[in-house]
Image 1: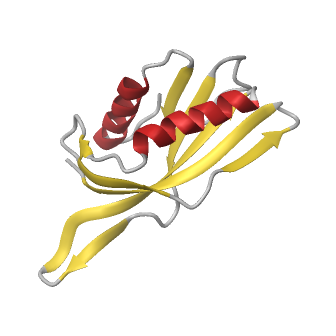
Image 2 (image 1 turned 90 degrees about the vertical axis):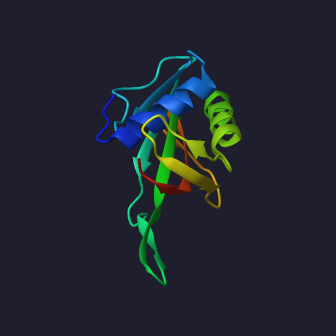
Length: 138
């Protein structure tokens, strides 16, 4: 697992703890090496370009900001990819709380749609979607 900040580690820990399913593998900004094995769902989180926006208030710039986070799910089975997407949506859509690093998440807003694709060479299904995470980092 490659993480570059306490927030990324805390976010992965929260997701892993809530999903708590051994068929899921979670990572931050690291693509799976080769095709996933049957029954395994690789879930990778990335910062999407142009997603970091701070709120400008009358008194100056707020500590609150929005980060665009992309979720990519890889699986050899289309139904596993769809089931993994449903599980992630069920957890994150509208989620709010405090992470173990002290970051406060005000809300997690889902993007417009999920995008499905199939890599014929690798024989891998991929589902991609994104969120805007309104937060103050701990």
